[in-house]
Image (tube, rainbow, N blue to C red):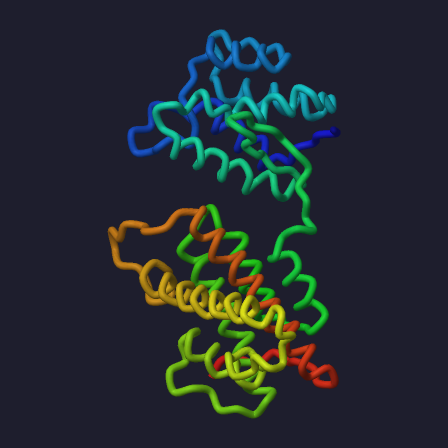
Length: 298
């Protein structure tokens, strides 16, 4: 597999492998602190020669990885990324290992790669972009020109690692905007309560998603489909509640402790994307001659 890293990915690898500058008392390192000799040993294991001596650790490490990148030393680059997230280094702190994986994958995604944990073995793989519900939604909203939803989706994906609270808020906004647009196109007044649960309840009937439309579904699968639709209603309510309790829509007080991490934010964003795509496709199926336009909140 050909491997080529961007400068942002290389910098992330440097921070994870070195553990940062080490002597900053107010900075929690993303990785594990390694001394000069340990960094040399780490790079030797990846077949990359490096000598730090009396020089600063981080610039020498960065230069060594950049040299491997410039030389297109694919095997060494792959080994560096995989060894940086080796779970054996995090036996006593598995949550730290997940943080490292999330941190690296947030950068690797833009290079087209992903680090995956297969039975305790970390492997660098090409990212399968076709399986993501977020990517499917992105393709759909380009066609119908949902510019505001696209902005919310982009913001959600960009802030998954750096600001999971904002990502959850954006995930909820995606669903709210789609529901508002459907109601406006159908000339149905918005509900008195404009939270996501109320908006979804208002569109279930016109889109034929309520239990009373069971007869429109083949009898053999009607109960199964209704069970899935019930799950959609539950998860939409959950995303709205999560935004209220842990998102940033209502501001953040000083010293507030973050309640969610990137793992939970990623779940919310991808669930919201899948459900928003389903609502758009249901609109297109039920009203094939009507175009769904983006409408600003009001």
